[in-house]
Image (cartoon, rainbow, N blue to C red):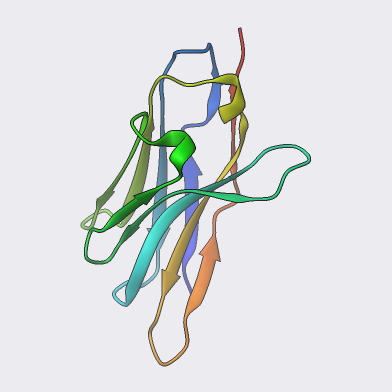
Length: 119
């Protein structure tokens, strides 16, 4: 069983920065990827960024050039550095970890952390 604990959300002004962290407990030795999703009020959850076991990275077009995802294997932690934040980045951000210990894949989600961009 994998548990995820997120931190780093908050209220910032447009143009500001935040850094989200997501620490995993339990075994993620069969990691497929770690990533971040977000869900704004009235909208579907959407991918923000993922980083694979092999360190391949994908970003949503809306955050390219502004957000950076990284991973610390020793700490089993994934980070999302968010710069040049815009009001449309306001959402609950969720950490996601996918593992494949056997034939099947398993997804785990954090509890979510609120990010609000407002002046």
